[in-house]
Length: 176
Image 1 (cartoon, helix red, strand yellow):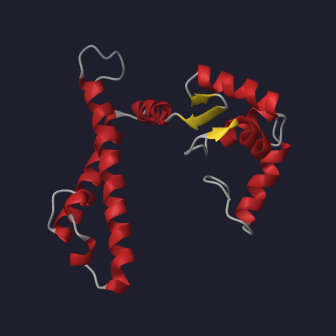
Image 2: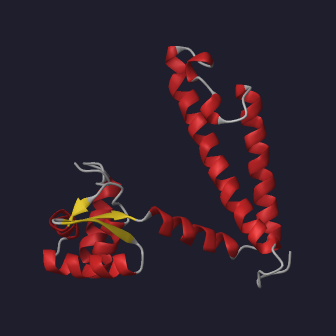
């Protein structure tokens, strides 16, 4: 199994696989591209998308042109998902929310972060030694909480960037 492959013997994976094989080739290549967290060659991508390598290459070139994937090696050609593209898309989706919704979501996330700061007695998840907060049997729960904290912080950063952009007088969107 490679990175991004669905787990074996899973109903969800089976349904996704069946749905993927019935989609047009460009859609199949796109869906595989969404899972390219590690570089993959055209042949591997073509196999995962159930299409010919030339078909995969054509669609990958188009996806690279619009920024969805990055060509990381030319010989042999290898592609990886372009994280900055997906970050941009996410921020654009967030920008479509009303300022009221943005502020409410930011307030909720700030409360979650404050609770985590108090729980761990630290200002950031990286400053926490998980072993100081759990017995060996509970360490996974602490790691999950720290991972959630990192996610909350990333969401706050994104929302704050969108809010600040909106508050900028040169922004021509919804009034602050």
